[in-house]
Length: 166
Image (cartoon, rainbow, N blue to C red; front, side, top):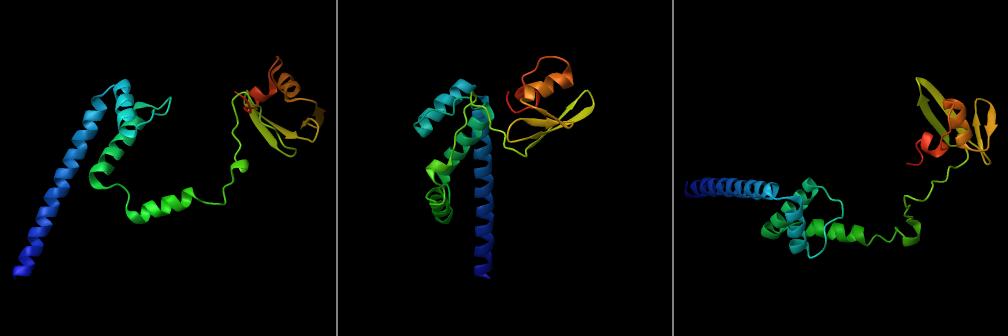
């Protein structure tokens, strides 16, 4: 009987603690939501000791700051999860040279056999990339611009027309 009442009391206390923690977290998030983006950036810098992502939106800043504050109060990841994350970070299968960063100014290379599809004025247009040039409606073109010009009747950058370049 005593054991059962102790168990019930423990459950009651745990429910109160969970409710209080949930209320604190809700209040913390509401406080963060009331801050301006600039204030959140200052808070980020103070909390993480680094600059926030350059174009981070307010929602992203709030989520990461709230998580970090909660993690610092309640311990963050479990030891098991932390070990898994560290193992993933040290994964030897990922080699630096296999990662290529494409800058906006770089054009993407279109490999032979790639099919480009564009709908224009309700008509579907399919282009196949060749080793040298492109095939459209059984005709070979040197560039995508020539195809785009034939489709639209006006001058177009072919890569822009087919959505390969912004």
